[in-house]
Length: 257
View: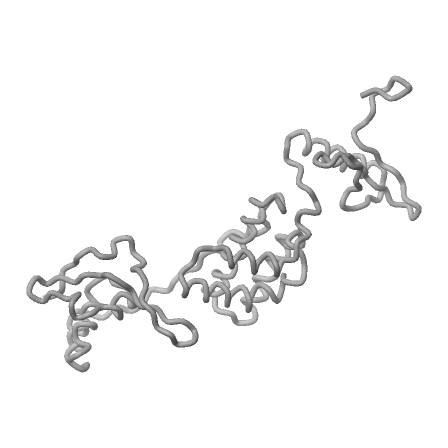
């Protein structure tokens, strides 16, 4: 578009403020209103470069409203957890991790305030404070998932949780009893728990699936066990049955001889 002198009008503008720094202004592609950039610059050249980058982002369709990430982190995290479809035990654990290990650091700020540097510092402080590595990994996974949703909601341009290896940990190899030792434990324990010991040792069943077994689920003649449910415990001590975690729940397996 040409101005009155016949010269092509530049995208946006830069101007020097009263205190010496330079400000970038451009048209919001969504509202058409003139808006200032998020920050000011020390030199006119820096401001012009920033304006060029903004123009390129708008042209490529990659521009994101800087104000979109101004939503309070704690409010967003609360809504994010509420709207997720989770089993009761998983929801309870996730809410606990967010409340104890994420909100204290990020809760008072906005979604846009969560940077990679802050995430790295937060993770390091949790580990230094003696929080168990599995819990730190879980907290990082939850924060990353939450920020992925913020990206999908176009509140931020990319996820700040970009620390390699922070989403996993090495599980130490657990000691394994020999077959003789397993039968020694089964013979030493009360008779009512003997089958539980054998099933725990010789099948791939989770403890919750073992705890939820009923007499009708055991076929001693056919040496079969049917997994219909799993038992879980909430932090208040309440026990409840849920569907088996494995998609193979309900399938039959062989009992040990």
